[in-house]
Image (tube, rainbow, N blue to C red; front, side):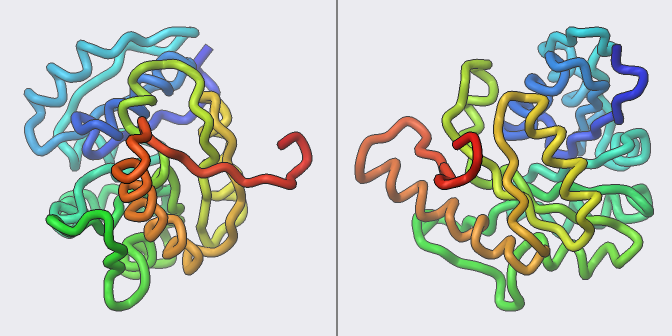
Amino acid sequence: MSDDRPSLAIVGGTGALGSGLATRWAAAGYPVILGSRSAEKAEAAAREIAAANGAPAVRGLDNAAAAQAGDIVVVAVPFSNHDAVLDEIETAVAGKIVIDATVPLIPPKVATVQLPPHGSVAQATQRRLGDGVRVVSAFQNVAAHKLREGTAIDCDVLVCGNAKEARDAVIALIEAIGLRGIDAGPIANSVAAEALTSILIGINRRYKADGAGLRITGLAGS
């Protein structure tokens, strides 16, 4: 049953990555809330996602209401919308874990690494939201369409954040949807995961791969 599981608010939940994560977590029994700038759009998308394993029906709300309703908040929005979305949810996420999956992709050169001038997107989120919010960077290197397909994904997820208990909580959520989370240390290390997305996009193009991923070798159970 979902009673002892945190509710997950996915801001940007109608996009490819957000809806893919929502599909996986709802199927795994987690209460899921989709957030969008349009509550109507979020509600329509929520009706397309099936909950299972005791989870309630997926809900759709506007971004601020979704962030307020969720125990853990996931930010899965395009880089161009990131600052505006933080404006919407800032007051609603105090004291919570915020998982930031945003990647600094700047068209047209999305296969070229273009990190923000002062580090990573996740670092900027932590500075913006303050120490009362535990920001965790994750999911930048997972192919969104594979999440929606529901099949096994040969990919690890790097998890960065300054609070170990927050990293551990996110790793548990990752394992619940059939992936392996790797504790990659403090939020400063999120620059590596964000940069890898552009590299993987280039690899996909050059090798005609269907969503190349990252696999950490040499660990117990690898």
